[in-house]
Image (cartoon, rainbow, N blue to C red; front, side, top):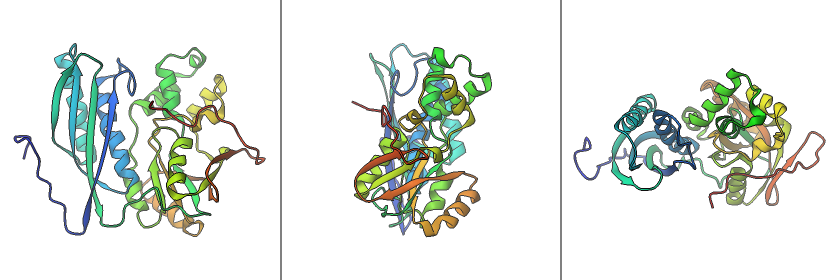
Length: 304
């Protein structure tokens, strides 16, 4: 209705389903208070788009509840709106409603994103089978290390400016893997995105599929910048599996579909890597090249 009414009207084409997801971000929790407002807005939209990507959906529209702190300036709000406009155009999605309020506490933004996909074709968490390969897209750990860079951790002070920019950018501006998600429909058996940490999120997939997972740590894709950070600091290589904010796709597929998975991923320009297998049992086991278990301090971000 062009934002002129209190509600929106949505038509879903015959043979399509509506996919709905919602994520919120709180200042000082999900983004830093001094982060550029346009990037805050873009990250807010992108983390929701990542959930649509994980189900293989095409973006349609979104609603937004923006609770601005009372000290916010007009220029901050204008930059925030500009960031939304930039990514609306980039990802083909429109704002169709919401609310704007003020709060005495930190700023909080809650976004509900909607997408569409063919009925019955959604990628879910409960479809993995024993023996399926486990894949990760892109690289893992950049978001968590990027946050450490932005917090000016002393142990990372020697990182090159290029590495610092790359890692900070990965934290502030994740890439929702929408094209990959759609390409995986019909070939992947289960999927989700990595928001709280690879180990924790894979655990959710395991629980829903009533299986366990065995991950080979050397096969987890890690960027050169992240490797440099690990080498310069007290970070354990295994810590990248417990970090959040990557928003890469984690998915499973039968071994006999491996060539098709790689072909589809290549077709949309997104690298993927096999990092392990689904196994009988429960829980996520991480091993090194010798097959020995690798302990990790944290499996993922804890919300409470």
